[in-house]
Length: 334
Length: 274
Image (cartoon, rainbow over all chains, first blue to last red; front, side, top):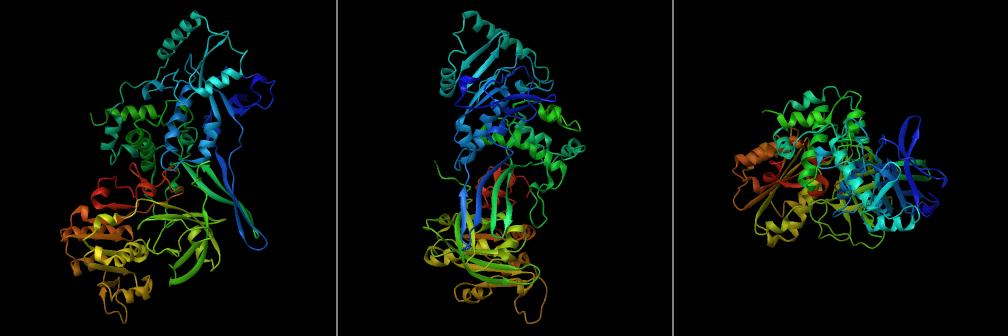
């Protein structure tokens, strides 16, 4: 990894059986890509769980100063993203674009080169990328896609950023042989077959949901929810956030305005200061999560806001299973 | 680097007026920006107002865009930020970013009669349109205000309302009878039915507590207003103001960006989740 010295490197690291993205500080460290998937999605590198927007302080003459705090200028390489997590960033790009571009998000996003790793076998028993228009070798959102060929990786550059990185890593890669390309095709076809959880044809799910807004279905499905928010914190596409002031000293005033991840599954997410709450119960909050991903987002951006990584299923403490919920929605009233 | 939408501009409080005291106090603040004021907004738009160390809150601008010297906000003391605002003094600094939201389509209302219907602090967003239409009186037909609060003490803009009577019909109400009150006693929707504004070539704008809005709309429908003639504003908890933080949505509409102004024709099509 010495070759990439000008970049800040992130890669999956194992710590007590848990894989998560960490910075690789030491250029001698070998990056181990023999992993399933990280618990926390790599969205945390582009959209951190906590980030400072600005600092404020009053000086002796009582004048107030505000200082914009922007992310570092260092280019970043994220190695080993599963294709679902790469696609998730492509979806998040849509949210943070538009009339009001999000300065912080795009500063990090523009500086990052995403090196994906195709899934030869599904990293989780709950993978369902094929159901939501993804695939174990999707290239969307990525700059380079690696495919594990056993004794070597096949690297395909997908963007200018990818070309640049491969150029800088010259010597690590050789030109592929024709049989390598064939092997990649074969592995990709096989990997599609290995995804065990699938629902065929959820194209009409958005229209179906629209009819179910007032259904008692949401009470039934959310009954066991303990509103922990894990489903949204671990989700690679969930982007909801809070903005708060953290005060270090009140006189003279000194503090920071910070953005933190938030979740639609918490009761106070939508609660007015008057106490009125438009989404007052678990049913309305599960409905919001499902509608945001499979109805509102579809109408706004023509995509599901879900890439089928399966984290929300694997880590839900009470077993709420988004595939089962979708399957029931699909057949509801039939 | 492009403009960073999350960085507020500093503004100084130049005037504070106590509108209502007691358990639900309301104050009106006027602010001017410290640096060049290139702030342009439409009636009905809002800003994210910062009290540094406390946070931000979405507040509607109650002054008219024709007023260039200051921005005005009438604020009910309610949560963390508004409570801190109520403690502030003239000369104190706040942060302002925005303006946000769609605003009222006042350009489409030229030549029409406008009936303003407010309850409590709900007069604040209405006040901006009302002042703007008074300022361009030739552009509009007859104007009328129907406004009420719990008690006469809870009415905002008391002095301004007196002056307003010289310019347009003003029908006030209080919820329950009180000594010396000579105008309507009852809820705002009842006053609407009592004054019977005509739907002929008219637009009705209503802001106030959700329950009042609901029954004002019902009253206006009884008076044969079409859905497209009725406008209201929606409030929800907001953090970003730019349709990204994910909490103020009604269906696929982010109220901060796509609202807060809706015609009843638009609003009734959205999920009833607000």
